[in-house]
Amino acid sequence: MAAAKSDARDAAPVARAAEESAPGSGAGAPSAQEPPAAPVEPTASSQHRSWVPVIPLGAASVVGLGVGLGTTFASNAASNEAHRQSAAIIEGRGQCVMPESSWAGPCEQVRNDASRADTLGNVARVAFIASGAFAIAAATYVLWPKPKRSAYATALPVVHPEGAGFAVKGAW
Image 1 (cartoon, helix red, strand yellow):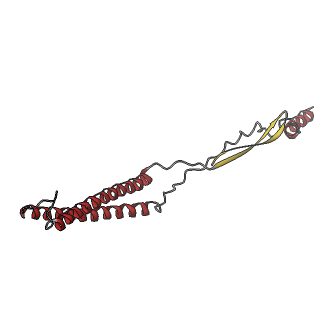
Image 2 (cartoon, helix red, strand yellow):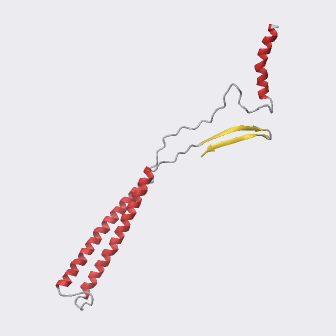
Image 3 (cartoon, helix red, strand yellow):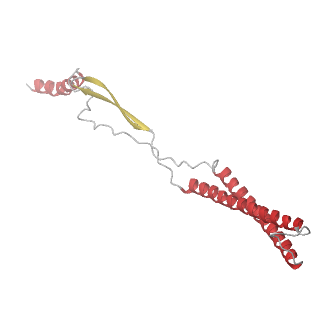
């Protein structure tokens, strides 16, 4: 009788293993001894941002600043020349509203210098705005938090009364 009990104990694990591997009887389900394996997510690797976009944005910002400064200096010089010529006309008892023929040339030069100063001033403003926009874009690229990407996929077998298959879950 002791031999019969021993055979029954030895046959129980074999019978249970046969039941688990039989078709339609929980195939694909985790066994009672092993807990189901949880999907392993990859650890966040320390990926650094590329400096490739920052270099041209920074260079464009510096160029814009240089153009803005250069055109500002040129605008100021043209404005100062127009003021100097205007003062000379006034000191000579002339005027540019309806100038005499002797003052027509100097008055035209004053108008040209004032127009050039205005145009260069507008170019300088646009260059300073562009320089600031490029600098802000570069700083935003560097300082904006990088989105966390977790590229993982998990494929698990699925068994149900209508059939079986695989379910894929992941993020890209």
